[in-house]
Image (cartoon, rainbow, N blue to C red; front, side, top):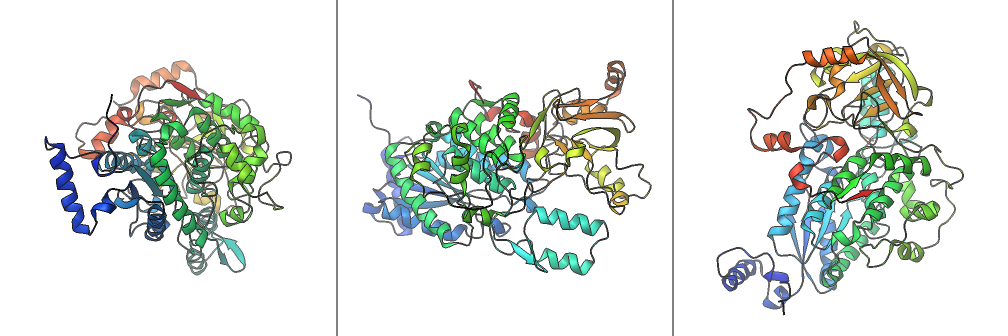
Length: 573
């Protein structure tokens, strides 16, 4: 008869060659914190602490740890907070994406290394949520997500605004000479008026909603503002539920199933969410041996209209979605498009949690299925000779007249080249041209920055041009908008066809046909490829930079580390 799995202080012992001594020594040191033997006999619930002085999105983490700890103790457990890396989008050089996998490794190894019967994953800002779930999926200890919550909107001269769609909108106006220095500084002070994550449908909001739809968060947990008392009540309930999950052995692999990821992808499309979320969901699924099929995702998009009227696709903010009922009315509106049989962290199915929620009420943020914000799918997957392994366009946030377009390429060879030439009065560019940025992918940048939102060249912005077709192997913020083709794979630094484009070439964007093509003969492309310099290598790099460069995968595989992903045995959708 096999021995029961170790629990509490008996878990994940330090190796001294004597298990009894390992427990003895562990208890001796933790008693220095004032614990009694009775306390140390209870289930241990780890709480990931992602607070940082650089991270205003996580300013309420100490409050949420206190509230979650209260819930753990009320349920008979012992809470033990522990730190991991904290990533704030605008404070991470070279990019937050560069550090996401490092945070995932940190979370996974700390969950594995330390005694905990369950773990509360406390994150919020863009890359922290997927990083924590990637780590938790690999460690496969009972885990539950708790996000910090969105900020409230600000106001400038009577206009409601917030981070960060309005950051980009007002900065574009400033670049076009429509605002003074004093006015842009006034706006700057109102864009993030409270703590919390961006209050529009950026990556943080998108990930929160998709994770709730996946079942890894308590119902209602995605949309509650960071500063509301309900956010702390959710934290308390999360703490209590973590204790029950430990007793039930409810591990991530039982919740994060192919069907649950399909639900998450449905919600990503229905909310008009961030293109970044597709990369993150792909990485999260990969940790469980589940692949995301881009053609299948495109098919979901054709079936799933955008229902949520929220910036950048619509007009409202996350606080308005919270007042409208959060995720539940979205799931109800999607109806049979959602798999209600999926298990959630509550121990109930998604359908049971939907039915148990209060009835929906009249509101104007979530549209009926028959009257969507955008009928043709939030995103489209493109192929073609420029993107053999795929590219993404957020067509719901694009200028519709540009979705079918042929134009002359104006090529920027990387971020330094873009910075040096974009605003030059001598730049040879017209509004009908297509801006091309390369060497901005996972390896090329490195870290696949949110540089795909290439600013309109200043000479054109001053003429009133608001949008152009822009293509790159980079990402863009979920808060951004415009006719922008992203995530071109393979990237140019990995030998992708983007490396072959020259200024003056013609490119055709055929969103209806799901293609992006360079209109140059195969013979000419072969000639150009033969003349390319050798691809960059990991030689001369060290530390994490070398690990990242040698191991990171392409956008279509989630930009995870190849060694962190098991064999893919299932695909979604």
